Amino acid sequence: EPEVTQTPSHQVTQMGQEVILRCVPISNHLYFYWYRQILGQKVEFLVSFYNNEISEKSEIFDDQFSVERPDGSNFTLKIRSTKLEDSAMYFCASITSGGIYEQYFGPGTRLTVT
Amino acid sequence: GEDVEQSLFLSVREGDSSVINCTYTDSSSTYLYWYKQEPGAGLQLLTYIFSNMDMKQDQRLTVLLNKKDKHLSLRIADTQTGDSAIYFCAEGTGNNRKLIWGLGTSLAVNP
Image 1 (cartoon, chains in turn cyan, brown):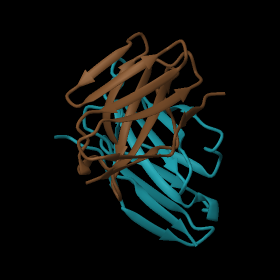
Image 2 (cartoon, each protein chain N blue to C red):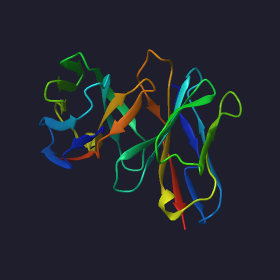
Image 3 (cartoon, rainbow over the protein chains, first blue to last red):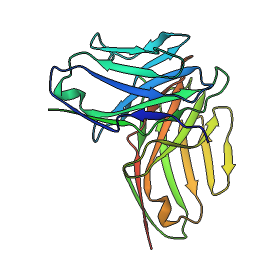
Image 4 (cartoon, each protein chain N blue to C red):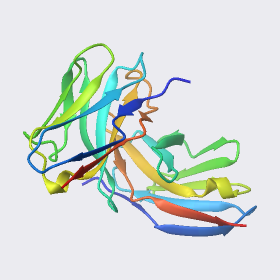
């Protein structure tokens, strides 16, 4: 069964460093998302991406964040200069098309900023 | 603004039914979802219901939606120890179908 994959599963980085979190959505999916879950808090929407551009972003998704779909398979989230408060589980998700609402999630990347 | 609330904990005995409740605020939500998260694992889509439906049944799972009260529930029949997990309620909103999440209900199933 097709699934969303994410790498790495755990990333430890120092404050101020750049990190890139990688996702491979399900192959025929067209809408892509990043969410994050800070320990003990709700899962929060960060950004949605469709047709090679950001379709919506939350107020969390400031200039330190960017997303890219560099080829036909990968979908990346870059954090330019990490802060301690960026420590969280980051989930990638995708859906197949506008008429379908089943949003499938990857296993997540745990980002620890020290 | 949009918000989703759930009770944090539920404990049931194996074989009993579990009912997990959720309330939401956005009346324009199109779909409402239940996801399951087992320890150390990702978010698994369990089921979802379109906002113009009252009920959806899928094997041991029954979803009830009271749109007037903005109340959603998930009933798990014959709960097993393997059902122990965190259950998240989420509402799908907007053209981009972003999900707004509850905090999750931790279900403990006791033998």
